[in-house]
Length: 431
Image (cartoon, rainbow, N blue to C red; front, side):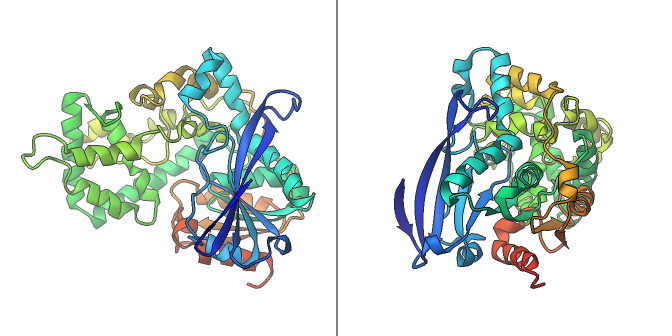
């Protein structure tokens, strides 16, 4: 352990050894990293623990400077542990390079099956017992972290003092296809809103798409290729509070001054939005986080996209209609275009067709849950469908939903103190 100070906080780094496969506790181990944070001047031993589960899958916990974002509110009442979920950050991070020594795609895929929410929850339980002496702790889950919190409520509720969930109530008995049929509709509505707000972006997006279509794509910094479909994927911005405005600024000046080529500035910005070098696990396991219904996801986002012809950019170019941007979807062609993903293409294909995922949720256990729980459900959420969230909220005994249209999916980051404070107050019966 090492401790250090930042403005208003004291941080302590922890590293834990956990089984790669929790069903084989004597087998291989991996490291899991957690960063403890307490407010300066507070006695940590007198504070209850709160563990934070980050969105993703495949992203490390935030790297804070002082009492940033929701931490400012949390540190009033808690001793916080920012957990790098297995395979992310400093927790035996997954990459094509780290998986290469395993050899075959089959072995890589088998290894990757150990990095879903069920394993993350079992890691948290081992860590909890080590840090708290067996006392339950509070769990705060954002987005995919909220999915993990529902898995926690399903299989280890004894370890939870309370659950606080933001933008992350999953469907309990839904397939990936069900999710995407809802999110494509929401994404289409967000495109309409964006073009109504910035009507000049219709022509700008068409100009970029036409340029890419004529050349069958162009290279991006870092070696990826920007095709029309990859360009459409920058629509992931539309699910964030400032995303429509950021998309507009990206589109307002995409070409060099002479208009001949896409500018380096534009290409670098798009590369940062569409590349997976920093989080390949996100691409590999994104659809797998919906698995567990006895069948493979089989690239559900790609298959369901065919049901929504408005997202066919090439047809839009021919018809003179707006080019529609996509959202938080992973497509098989991404593994061909991105050099960070190409070595994982075969393993990803195996995972996409795997039909034997263990269930991530236990509806019967959730129906009799005794853990205090509150969830922020964002009415306009483009990534986690509100219909599924409300259905799940009603299926978890005692869970109090706060349905709000004031925030987007990134509400915890943008207005975290207020969002977290509301959930804490709800669990305490103060609102």
